[in-house]
Amino acid sequence: MVEVKGDDRINDDSRIKLKLGSKWADKAGDKYFYFMVFENSKIEGSLLVGEFIDTIKEL
Image (cartoon, rainbow, N blue to C red; front, side):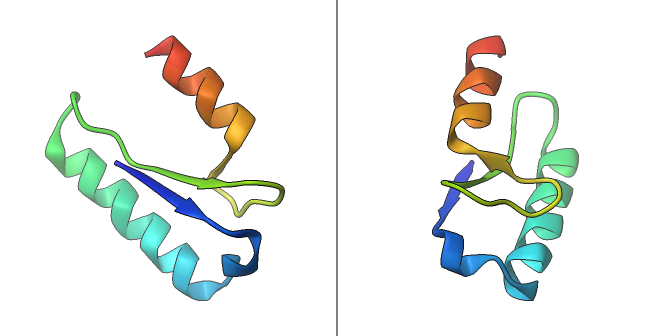
């Protein structure tokens, strides 16, 4: 699952959603992933667009 966020969404709500999404991916199994992606800035645990593209290439 990919959740794309605008840089204006760097806030506590996004941090909570990131934790929830990561927990979902852990419980869902090895075939499921959760990514929160920002364009220019990011919060801990999220990715920038370029990082996300590189990650997908490695899967």
